[in-house]
Image 1 (cartoon, rainbow, N blue to C red):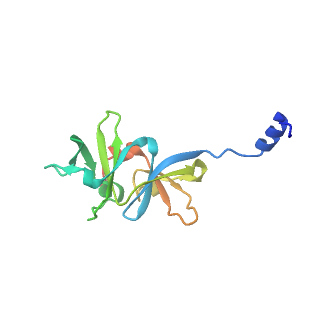
Image 2: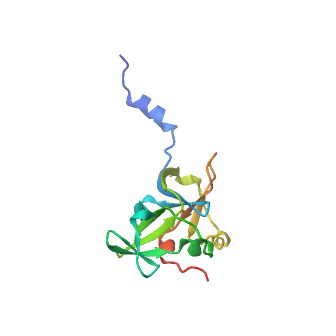
Image 3: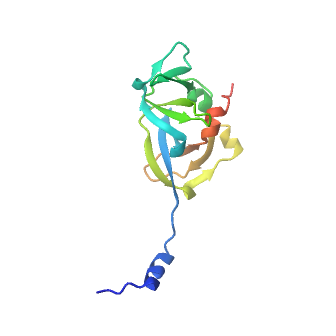
Length: 158
């Protein structure tokens, strides 16, 4: 029977570096992949569960009015005719919900924090609300990390 030694355990674990990962919800919009921290997303639902009311910027989910963000205008400064299949419901600090329509089903991923690179101000002019970009992994698209606060409260560029 092997003798368990705390010294042996320390030697084995001393050289291992702990990799801190962030849980993100990843999704495509206009063929560009974005990510939001999982804590920022209240719920991901199919668009078929939403009901539009007269004002095109307000939708209903479970009889609760939700403001719809024009994410194409906010991120790309243009409107594109597309058929989103899913919506991410984001909860604001005042507990009101805001919806972001996305093109495909979102995926939960854990990505090491050190793989993200902070973007420069000149890069944020290309896609506002992006705070960092993940280094491209093998067989993975480039991932743009969005700031939920900027996404919810920034004005679209006119």
